[in-house]
Length: 496
Ligand SMILES: *Cc1c(COP(=O)(O)O)cnc(C)c1O
Image (cartoon, rainbow, N blue to C red; front, side, top):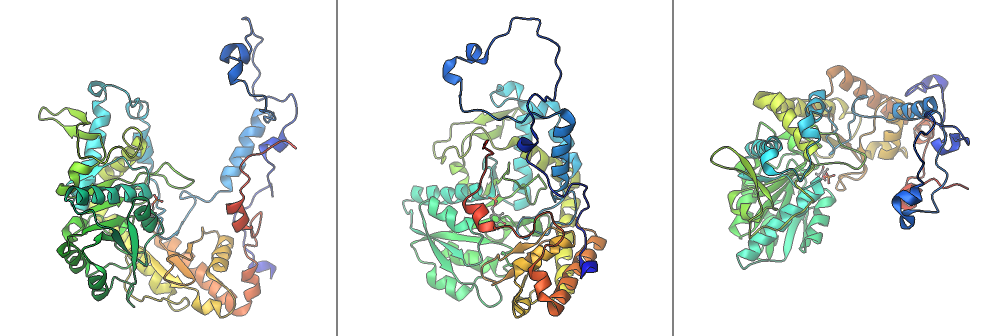
């Protein structure tokens, strides 16, 4: 048994106390010279009302202790700089260092949002150019860079539909959402005041035109579609789908989180999309994870432009840039200031560094990698929708479940092989889903290592399912109680 356990990452310390638990009174990370000016207490400086009596227990540690503590913790984390991160739907691609270098340029990194327009021309140009690049990539006419995440982009986009239809005197009631949609889609629809009408996908995982025809009534404001969908399958009938929705006076929203499958190859405006969002923290390689910051720009066709969030960045005839607040039909602001600027700088750096050819190759490599994984694993894991995939592929744990092993168990065992798990149990239309998105960042050698790991796990399940059920075996902690961790998180250390 022992020789089957592989070490994920060796480390001298098997476990790490909290920094608070390492504290001992009187230790300090700095050694300052004695004060040679009169000392002022914080109460005198701030005023009594800003003094808190309940603050206590700051850790007292030396400089090497604090540096080593956090450096050790950082090496325990698995990130896109560590290796393959095949978390489907999340597009965990490598973040090129050129993006960071550009985002750290002083003029871009330190400009204040209240800098007068005349002194912020460089930053305004970054907004304008990023928006123009995204318009070119999507085929759309106008872009708002304000939304701070994909989900906020969705909400913004649906609010644009609402504003437009209200303006036409026909606000309507429902938005259609396929059953394969990301959970944020029905949430965005509901928050924006529409009701969700779910539509069931057909046996090959796409929208069923006949069903769509039945539910697309004059009460329906539009369709919210992900393309390629969450099965990684391109909706080949997208033109017919869009025509059908448009014929009944509805609008087509595309969740563009899967644009890594399309950039440089197909433009959503060309297949009938009216409004969409992009995830710069997925497709455009800006850092992602741990709760932000993200960026979810919204791209629209011309007739939706008047409703975009205010202010927009405009270029005058003399080549200068300015903010336009005078937009009477705008849905208003969706975020303070103008968006997560640092993310926009990184995305623009990525777009410019790649150029049109590079962006297209990125897409082609991402699709090739996913199909390679799919074709080399489909004899051991069940493939419920056996179409050629786009940027990700979705298996089910059906065969392994017969031996009592589910997708989460396989994912846990994958950690022992040194890989970040794939996405488990999503999309919901595949019971026991294993959703794998390698992205273009993986070399063939790395993909082969991943494939070998997945094949080895399938074999282990045949021979000794119990062993896999107890995985991971090589991590500092094994199975955590994830439900309790999510429902009753302890986020603050408190002295006993
Ligand atoms: C990631 C994702 C979203 C949500 O994006 P966030 O930035 O996490 O809010 C929406 N739809 C799909 C298909 C996604 O993959």
